[in-house]
Each structure stands twice: as C-alpha cells, then as structure tokens.
Length: 134
Image (tube, rainbow, N blue to C red; front, side, top):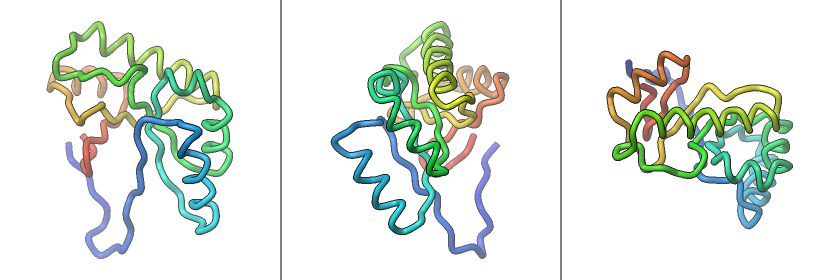
C-alpha cells in the first residue's frame, strides 16, 4: 500500500538516516530547534547503543524515531532470519532508550524484498522507502 500527504498541502517530511552521530546529529537538532521544524530520524541500533543521549534528545524535542536496522544490512541479499534479528535488536534497544518501540522502518539502501515487506507488515511496521510508505 502506498500513502502520501494531501496534494493541496505545502508540507514535506524531513528525514535523516544512519545516526545518531555526534559529529552531525547535535548540530542538526540545534537547527531544527531554532526553526521549530520536526523531523523523523531513522536510527541504527548499534549507534543508539553508542549514543543513547542523542536519541533521548531527539525524542524529548518531539521528533519521530524509526528503525534503520541494527547494523545497516542490505536486506535485498539477507535472509529472513537476519531481518528478524536486526529488527528485534534495533527495536528493543530503541524501546529501552526512549520507552517505546518505533513503528517506522526504513531499509538501508532502500532495499527490501516483498517477503520481507509482508513479514514487517505482520509486525505492524510501516516501511518507508524513499518518499513512499509501503
């Protein structure tokens, strides 16, 4: 299923992938705060483990947080067990850090198979690929 915003709306969705990274994330958050702009951050579980305070700040400042896997796997060439392990690790760590499991998921490189989409939908995940929600 594909979704999009209202065609008569002047809104966009601002998203960031692969963080958090202290070299960039803090500056991005400062700019977003200055201009009162919300965003969605698709974070890597392994980076959440390294920089939980940045993820807590994202959440505290009202940004959405989604999963971008645990280690940035190319799911187009990964088996279902890898998908399940990556998602569980990432979502569990995000929940431990901010108190809830993310619902949004953006696959690294934008790559995902139809079987993986079906599996993720069964887990109530919304898959964000480029500008589309699957």
